[in-house]
Length: 213
Image (cartoon, rainbow, N blue to C red; front, side):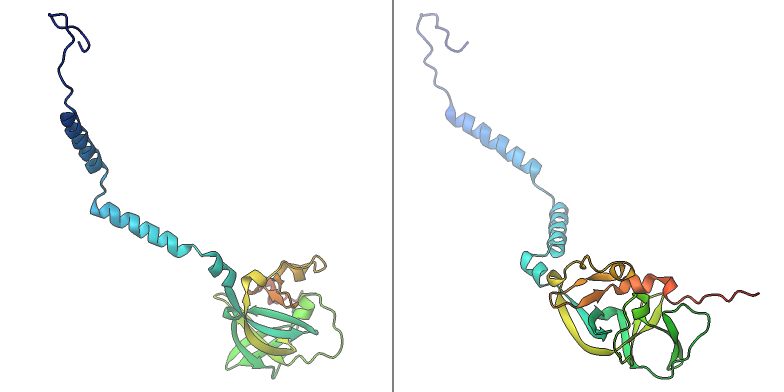
């Protein structure tokens, strides 16, 4: 055993082979490293996953600059906007035909190049006060995959971009059905309507049935 005396009573003078031990460590390290080395397929999979993750993550600067495109309009002396991808076209109101037995907010229908479009007065739908003498003569046609209808407004003012970071929650004073269809307000008091909710509400254009006596 190491440290025992030789037969002559003197301790062993055999030297430790550091070079051999270094070679063994180097060989063991090479085996370990080769065991953890990924294959070409593994490397490609990892790189693809990292690229996908990086593409999905916005930097703080990108998030701060994210914008939505909107069409802005006036209604009852207030400023509203709706995301432009819900707007199919803007059309002058012509030849409105009233339809009996419809909800109060349905003013009637118009014929746009052979297509019958329901016309909605969202002042009534949102319970907005009818103040002054508004000039309701512009029709904003909203459209989704399953529904389309026209919203009657006083004037269409512009198309614009609004930073998402600038959109604030609706004020507590705005309650009821109006609040539920708002995405939020901008600092200069433009109310952004939720076009997705409007176009997913089947009751907004459903005709009421006439009850037979």
